[in-house]
Length: 236
Ligand code: C5P
Image 1 (cartoon, helix red, strand yellow):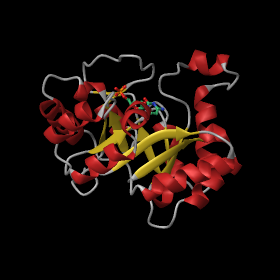
Image 2: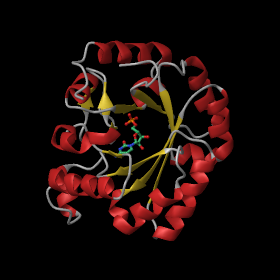
Image 3: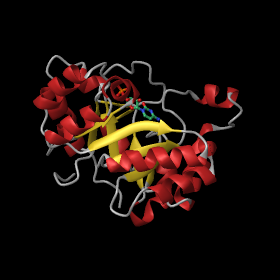
Image 4: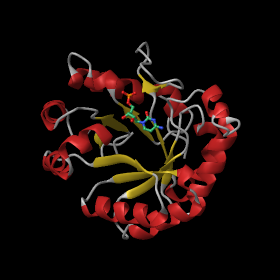
């Protein structure tokens, strides 16, 4: 774990900037990145991204674009213009959409990652959607992201060990659904602990409610970092 490249991304799932910025101000941008998702971005727009950047945070803009290639490319270009650190699209949008997204992000712009299968889906739900076995589907989607030139994927930490061969050349695995030891799963169906996720080769861990809903978010983040530090070293 390095302070230049913090592994924990705190999901600021708030209804307004006030709540998000209050928690962000209690955290140290040297120790984590922050994630702005649909709720907060719909409420506050680019201003909240700028405010978080103003506090020194690198921002993962998690809007999971999934539309026709042209529309997704235009949205990615706008996201890149915000100077965010990471942006994402749904891998299920298909290779042409992924390539259009890649082409819209300038060199040196945000890392572009593809969402494989949401961590809130159980394997049974994935099968009911007609997507087959979830591990196999995740692998196919991750490979299509790599082939389209994306910088990584969002997947469950249950799948990271199966995707290690894709991690060459800086292709990263971003894993939500992470819970510190003993924390509630909430609505997530495929959770892993911090230690399990890092041991299985995850590069970045998205952690929301265990930090943001804690009575003391800074202390909760410190506990997560302590758990991460005793995890086995990340696989190269
Ligand atoms: O509170 P919690 O730790 O469950 O938050 C997880 C965050 O990661 C949420 O913001 C959710 O939208 C996001 N996410 C996810 N599963 C994915 C992609 C993103 O849970 N596959």
